[in-house]
Image (cartoon, rainbow, N blue to C red):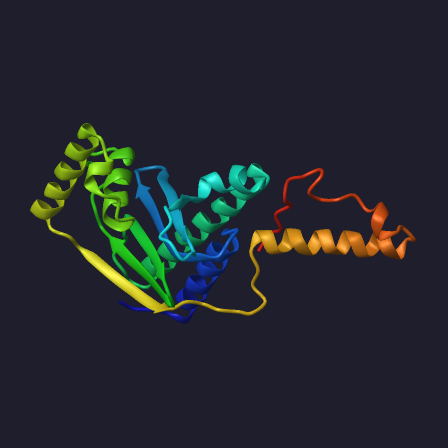
Length: 228
């Protein structure tokens, strides 16, 4: 698969945006995105999960649950998700410009120091399965959800979806590299801590004693998200 210098930059930016959205230390990340080109419009979806770092194996966290779980402004957080999806769309455009076959969906997996992208070319427009059906199957394959954790109807959907893949065959292209790492890249929670510390410093400089500074834990406010 051809990789241009611009694609390299886009991969780096995708990782930077992805890592920024995670509010805690993580073990692995799994993202799905689809882009479906119709005659006059383009549709698609994106969802992703991360597995928190810990001694014991933890359950995957759906990032769209992060705002409520970590007291973050949902509207601002969704803007970050939109920015990430736009960057994935930009990658697709760049690949097509350089003669690559248009893919319809991809899965990004980040495990340890490896960043991996699987490009698929499924005919999503004429598929018998809905977005929800594909989401279930994707969870089974990539998140490792046990088949018995799904209800009977969901298990039947997954089995049919896998059967269709076997019949039609899988056309997949893969790109991988070591994860992008920069010491100064921070998460949304890091920015919140810095802002709280800055506020306390300013208050002290203005002659307010430490004892007079309101305790952040007494009145919890929504974290402010900064554009990355």
